[in-house]
Image (cartoon, rainbow over all chains, first blue to last red; front, side):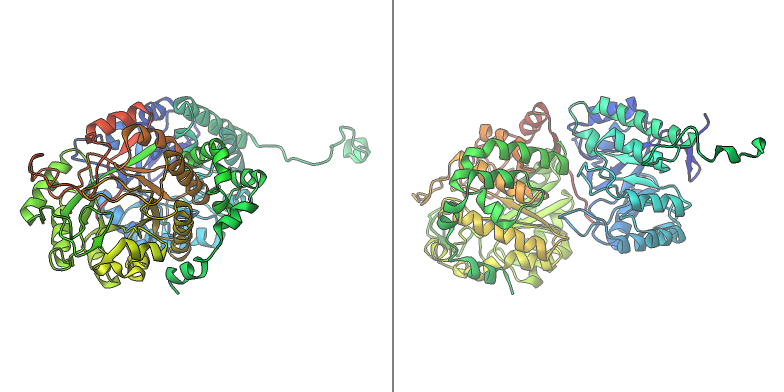
Length: 259
Length: 370
């Protein structure tokens, strides 16, 4: 149907992005990525293990997948920038998801440090995706700083609690002209579908797929749910109402053709 | 205010009295709570909670999988020196023990590093005895300079340092600190550490906080279980972990739950800590601190370590040696006795194969030198 998301010149057909951190094995992760047909996957640079006798995660990313390196482990903008530069030097590409976390209890992002990293990295030519708490003012600043998209959280990382921030995400979808990609907290395909129905451009899922009993089937289920939600959004979801709408309205006689 | 103040405020807390008020329903509710209170955590350490280990285990497993996925971080210890000025009655490095004393030269450090890194490991924990003469901070720093070439994460388990010294090592590339109080009970501590700088209880107790202040990424604490009543010790360990987590939210807090193992002296533990007790401790911690990293060392036997995999642990050592130069410098016959006996002698490859078989991804690298 010719619907695709375009970021930095890359056409993205599959609006499900998958994170790679928590799978029981790289071979299973690879099949999950392949069978769900994802176009974009995130990889933490801290896990990339080149030149070692042990397996390297990058060898298990399907060639069709574009890699977005994330700065997991960064505690401030400076560390995030250093990780991004190391990724570029290691030829891991220039798509960077900024993840700056200074709170190990809830793993919630630090929006201010994230913004600082976005400002610096955009100037250096990176395509930057800030992972953030859904805050409109901060999202606007991310736009001004040159972010390629914004990635608000649905609920805390790994919580599988769904779109607890729904009201705020809706505001971002309405007000921010960049793609809104919900990242973190989605526990079920129906929640990914919900994000897409709201008009989000894509979703990023890791935990719910990686730790399910059958990650490959679950990845496919998420891909289907994302697709369904997107088609529903494009089709124009009728407004919901808590009361019944009479099929024979009382004011029907006022229609012009009857006068 | 430091953790010593928290300890002082709670040292007379009547744990037995509290346990007598705990009911099965209270424990059940704690098992299902999203964020436990400190009281709920302590209730999970009660004798009564032993009846609900399965429910605790189910919940601990679910939490661990959500937060950490199906992964286990691997590392190995590397002993740099066993010179020690302390007389700790349970330790193989006790200055009164007649064992060969060794300190690795920098060339030997390099040799050990090459051998260890050829196994694929990228995370290393370096250890020394407490001797500011034989293994001063400048020596540790020189070792770190070499190790940086081979490892992407370097943690230290050495004598307590000043904040400035921790900062120097962090600056050089050390990202993790492990320092165990051994005994939180101050009176027991005094009986166990009878001579040397380690007799300074408070300097050791506040070391994790100094490390956190100096920008260490991870700080791991613990008690050597068996030295004193384990329930009291774990109560203080929990308070300590909470204190650090609240004060330093950007530091990854970890715990280890080592039990006394046989070593060259004839010290016998004062308190027996069973496998069941260790399981209860790990589960209680996981429920109280969902994001806590929990380490199980090669002090434990292979079967037990494997059974713990599903219960909340996140890190394990592999291919361990507790003697200086034990990885490459000295042949098996030349090695002196270690700090304690290792129960799990498996190589890194064997541990890796075991993890894969059990459905876990062995993580060799989870940090990078910045």
